[in-house]
Image (cartoon, one colour):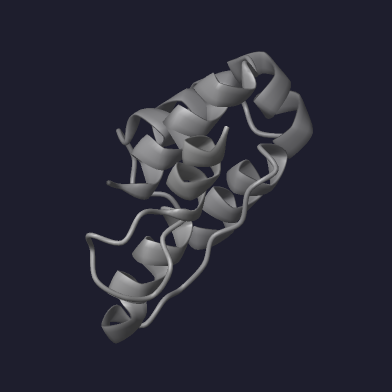
Length: 94
């Protein structure tokens, strides 16, 4: 998923308007909209400012660590894919 798509999704999760993000970043509403829609190729500092306005951070992950990071973010422990995630084990006890 592209960074612009992730930021767009994050904005939806938070329920923040373009105007709110515009105010937090000192960017114009059209500029915020263009970045979040992926219409423009923005500078990293612009993307970082948008992420910060949505209580998120950009993280650079070496490619060889991506599978491990994805597993951690999904709530699964290190090991085979058929091992239930921490959340699955918790819900099974309930």
